[in-house]
Amino acid sequence: MLAHHMHLYVLNRGLWFPPAAITYSSDSNSNLPQEVLEYVIDFLWDDPISLARCCLTCRAWIQVAVYHLRRYNNTSVLTIRNRKSLTAHSRASKLMKTKRPSTLEIDENPRKSYVHTFPMLMPGCNLSKESTTLTIRRLDLAIRRPHNQFFRYLSYYTHITALDLRLCRFESTPQLRRMINALPNLTDLELTGITLRDGLVTTLVPHSITLNRKLEKITLSHPPGQGTLQHPVWDGADRAAAQTLLAVCAAYSTVLWLSVDANYFRSLTDLKHFIYSFPHLSHLRLRSHTRSRWSLSSDDVGVRTASTSPHFFSLFELSTVSTACAVQLMSLVSTTPTCSQLEELIIRHEDTSGPVAELLSDVQHTLHVSGAALKKFTWVWPCNSDSQLVPRLTSNRSLRQVEVTLTNVPPSLRIIESALVNLISNLTSATGLSIRIHLQHPESLQDVYDISRLRTDGTDPIPAFHTIICSALFDEFTGEHASIAVDFLERNHPFQTQVATMSIIRSHIVALFAPWLDKKVLGLLLDPDPDSDIRFTSWAVNSVVWSIVPMLWMRKACEDALPTRNTGREEKRRYPLNVRYYAIALLMQRRPVIL
Image (cartoon, rainbow, N blue to C red; front, side, top):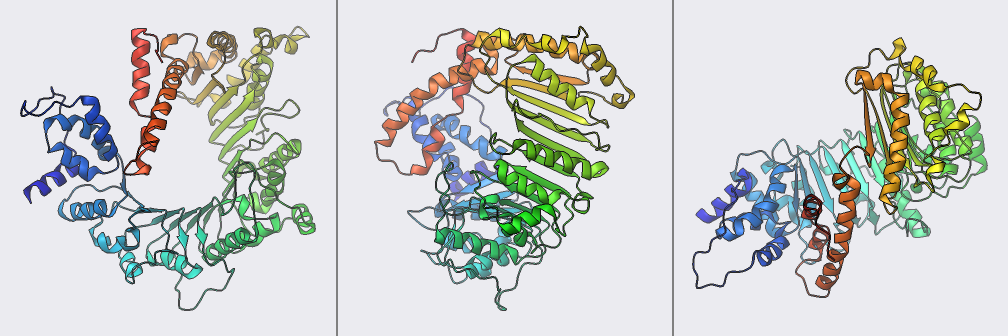
């Protein structure tokens, strides 16, 4: 019993053992090499209870076990992967009056199922008030039915306000609703990769089920049956399952914040019918991890020309949606009523095909209609020589923060200067400005020196730009109120060429923003930085790291051929944390990497 309380004390108090020479109690036993100890104990990386017991076994095991325990002591997430660990953590949370994690993650063990009984093994009354998020992974209630007291004991988790269900499978729609409604104070719901065995689409809620009237935020991602990321595949069953999940979420009319994958819908009309279920909706995030293939019906044409959405959005986001789909979605915020309260607009675009110019025009129209209501603007845009890089912000006089990221930009002084000058010249308010530019690799340094194209008339645009950034509008800038970061998308090109290119770009940016640099209100970050020691740039460290990773992959392939106790633990060993520190040590000692 004393040993049991000791390992709980080590786990909860987070004892730190100072480095000491490894000693053995007896010479009769063979001294195991330190590498062997690390290899064996590393398999316990996801079991803090066993790691705490290893600390009490002998001194030779302390340093290896503490290496993993520090991660549990410094994190706010508690991950449980088996019944034994769940029981031990439940006993520890009941006996020890210490700070608990804010997130409880329960990962189902496919070999020995235990999640269907976890509310009884870890009663909600044992959790502290700091534990507000519950994450459940790979739960399959269609095969293993829950305990008959499962939902009753789940209702005792009164401090849980956020529920995250990932890759879970339920028997039917009422079972999923019972899971959601069992938590009395639930306000945030996230469903990722949810499937239902009974895919019957129904919009009616049985009278016997009491809906959660406190739910304010819903996140729907990764619809069922998408196939590969590049080519989503939908069949009748998958479409029915997606419609069923939408019907489950549409029953909660109190939702204010909605984040949904665009692939759940077949057209803009379907999306509009879904968001009509939430009369108080004010935050809408539309994302897509695959390329959306929407069909533009005759109803969508009328919807785009005359939007009748009753919502007044305060936040609207489009992320990684195809161009054709994004053009249709922008109609949701194309009128004055829908944009009268729009405070934050987020556009993250990657697709360079389709009607890009039309999408840019729609975004420009939304910025103009939102006017002084807009407070924050986030813009991620791929470089396209046929279109403008940054929209004009002259109509937004109350902006407080602007974040601009330009991707796939040619390393041309003309393009970089044009984007920077157009963005800052159109600002009408003193905003927090963050600019990030991802460059392509230059074919030659001559491609960089094309700034002369802007000066064919013999005039120098830099003094005029200095007049703009020295105006009274930017007098409120204090500290590093603005930042500019420039780096390369790819690292597999000659490093010296990238350093020479960055040196040219830096000299021109310094000339452009000399007044801000003198007042120290602009932070400039270049990667690789021509002024820094080449050995310690992130490019150099990553180069050494990726020269070591193939060796780890080869070792991983050998380990896969051997039987292991838990395949889920192998992913953590694919890229150890000490590889990067080893690479830095090699650079510091100027030693070549021997493969």
